[in-house]
Length: 209
Image 1 (spheres, rainbow, N blue to C red):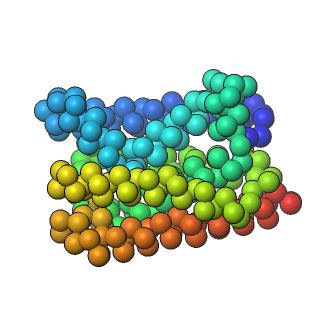
Image 2 (image 1 turned 120 degrees about the vertical axis):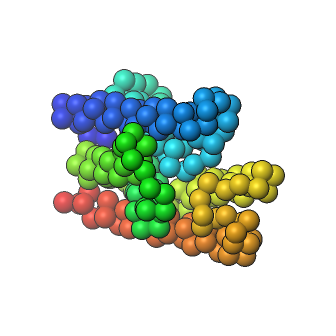
């Protein structure tokens, strides 16, 4: 990460916004679950949107408060920041192209939904564009970056097998069957890979400027 006063201010404000967004969504989910904490936590953490936003929040917090520590150094790496950019951008893309409008939300639930699926991706993308040092990005990293989404997909399929419930309609084995659900998952993983290559390409080009 580029070290500057504006970058430090940006990550501090971003960290507060993302943590607020996560907290708001948890409060909404908790109310919907009748204030059942175990059920809420289990369902809450089953969504890729939530786990990715937690990663985003941890990243901004580490860069803000622990920049000189091991955690801060890890999150400050160009490869780490670019991978997180890919993850959160996919969250925004999939929601706004495939999931928006499936459930009508109002009030605080709508606010939390927009914060996590729209505001957060924009905040991190802007951060990547203006404050991330993109020197040293390598195309081979795109494969390594697939580990997180792959683990999520495998976990979701196994979890769904036992509880007969899935967080997203495009991997809902109950309604789609395994062939279609797995095909959809493979397509999404492929999107992750293509987007990773795209960001690495853009990063390498801009690093030379």
